[in-house]
Structure formats: structure tokens, C-alpha cells
Length: 216
Ligand code: SAH
Image (cartoon, rainbow, N blue to C red; front, side, top):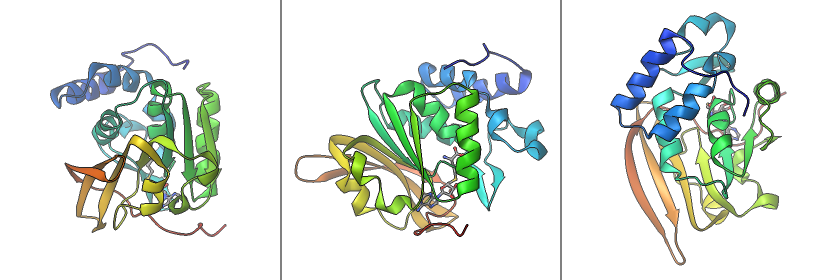
């Protein structure tokens, strides 16, 4: 991925320190340092682009908090052979962090405007291994299944069985679970031959996973 060399500004340096302090792996910090978060944040929030906070991106949605992006990325245990599915493209920031760590990323967003803007960012950053789709991610992407990894960036009520079905045996899914915005847990699901192994990774706060396509 062509990105400016880092560190580029004091805000980014502070963010890198925060990520380090929280034990994020150096390889992931390196990619986040090279991913210009300011490109994924609306004009009105430019001065906050390097805060370790979720920020509004329109349509009542948010770009995820950088530390959570790092933790979800790490939990996926990616390799350059992985075929990955993301539900909830949003700004495209999480996708841009995942793309250099995997073979191909498929990402679904229900709001067409958000999808269009994310595509422009991927093009500007010359990220070529992302395929996007506008629609309801609760159905997954059956034509491309199975996936080695699945990441859901909106909170589901329960682990979506359709997505577990689209996970390869040995594959990993990370998904925030909870029906209340103040009471969600990040869950890691490993699909095994006959069952799944579920690990709780702690508290998170995400916008809700909404079934069905967004109105045009
Ligand atoms: N990964 C994003 C975070 C976006 S917030 C980023 O880095 O910016 C979650 C996104 O999930 C929102 O854009 C929302 O529209 C989308 N979403 C929620 N439910 C969905 C569904 N069923 N299918 C597809 N996208 C969904």
C-alpha cells in the first residue's frame, strides 16, 4: 500500500504511544501508523482524527476507535494467505488496516453513500485487494464463502449462525455481541470440525448490526 512514511504528526505519535501502552503488536502499530486515519474522518472532525476515539461518519454511524481496530485486527491472527470478510465497511478504515495483512478482503456495507466514499479512499490509497458490496451483511457473501476470517464491525444480538456457516474450519470470526450500546462484549469464534470455541475479549461499544438494506 502506498502511504506516507511515518511518524507524520504529534497526534499520530501520541496514538502510537497509546497503542504500544495497550500492548498492541508492533506489526499492527506499523500498519496503523502508515494508514492516514484523517482520510477516513469527515472534514468537521479533522482535528480529532488521531484521538483514540470513535468519531461520527454520517448516517448515525461511526469510524471505530483505533485501539479497538487494533485489537480486532490482532484477534484475527491474519496471514497473507487469508481470505477475509468484513461486515460494516463504514469509513473503510478497518478495511484499510486489514488489507495489507491478508490476501483479499470482501467488505459489505448497507449504506451506499458510505460504501462509495470508502471505495474512493481505497483507490486514493492504491489498495487493490478489497472487493466491496452494498447490501445486507447478515446474509454474508455466500458466493465467496468459505472465509478464513470474518470481522463484524457492528454489534449483533447473537453470534450470526449464517456467518459461522461461511467460516472455514479452523477459521476465526470476531464480532461484538450485545443488544444495548452500553453492554457489549467482543467475542472471538473459532470454527472447529464439529463445534465452535468462543472466547470473550472484553467490553466494546459499537453501533448496532441492522438487518436489511438501508433505504436509498
Ligand atoms: N469498520 C468501520 C466501522 C463502521 S460502523 C470503520 O472502520 O469505519 C458499522 C457499520 O456497519 C456502519 O457503517 C453500518 O451501516 C454497517 N452495518 C450495520 N449493519 C449492517 C448490515 N447488516 N450489513 C452491512 N452493513 C451493516
